[in-house]
Amino acid sequence: MRPREHSLLTHLLLLLQLLLPLTLSFLHPPHPPPAHVPAFVPHTPTPLTRSRFSAQTQLDFTTHCNSSCFHRGERDEQLTEKLAFETLYDDGSRTLTTVDVEGEDESEGDARLFAHPSPKRGPRVKPRHKRVRRQIYGADGRFNIQGENFLLDYPFSTAVRISTGCTGVLVSQQHVLTAAHCVHDGKDYVKGARKLRVGFLITPSINGTKADLTSAKKPLVRWVRVKRTRVPKGWIQGPQEVSMDFDYALLELRWPHRRPFMRLSVAPSSNDLAGNRIHFSGFDSDRPGELVYRFCPVEEESSDLIYQHCDARPGASGSGVYGRVWDNSLERWERKVIGIFSGHQWLEIDGENRDYNVAVRITPLKFAQICYWVHGNRLDCVQD
Image (cartoon, rainbow, N blue to C red; front, top):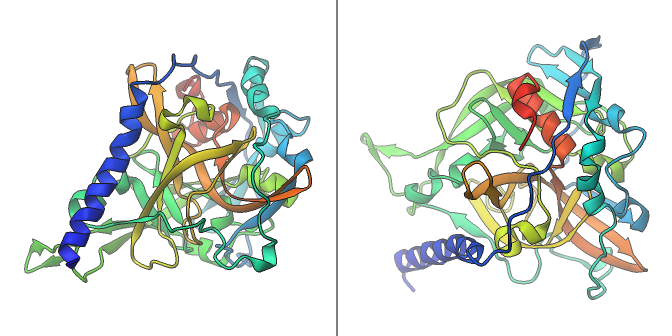
């Protein structure tokens, strides 16, 4: 098959896969009621000592979890402490903001919905030391996004590069959501966070005309400095299996971009996702310079995590995981960010060691927190 024919076939298959969830959505059961979002009340920030930026970036993030951490609900006595957050400024200074949560009791039903799911019984996976291509499950199901009509169009245009080697997703005109481990190792900020930047893909041009991205030329990257970084306290100095529940960070750019962004949503049950599918695009390390898209069904879900077998490699961490969810205000299905791709987890349930790629679920409380980070007030964050 000629290269051009192969490229056209790849794009055709990609379009069919993107349209499939929309087709399935017409057969969807009645829409669930909107999730209640509690009020997020921050206190006055407290100055902290300057960061040493001594940590090394860990792109291949792996955790282990047993039945006790899998069944752990979102609500616990230390929740407000975990929802406190650090703010890192571009001059190296940082602050700690403690918080209160109001109206939390009304959201208990949402947390209870995922607090005790029943893991599906699957085949026993191979021991870890025998696995060769971890994070790739069977045949590689990833698509390289090429061609200006795909690369710079929504939703692929919402994916951006993080200068530490990860991926992020645009969630406002000035904010990027990514994984916390891309900027902080749980004890200190990584060296690359000192001058953190976000990269926007742009098309190369020849003699003032845009080049065909199906050629050998790679898209160029325009880098923008980050003004402020926010990381939840649940990630900082927490046990590893707990920290993955809080593996997210928000980056504020020095100035607004002019691209479409993807709205956030409280993650619904997988049964309320069109086609039961999630999607995300990232900059996987084994395909340098390429934006890679993938989709797959949700395999398991806990109160804080989404377990799946979407093929991914280091570098995809921080990708915005999205699905088609019902928008009550627009009365239609919309792509919305419902999670952040974190990494890999070995889940031990009933004596079986299972192997998953994992995304952090945007719960009502996390939605309230991230929404406050974006808007700077709680009035815009009372509901999804």
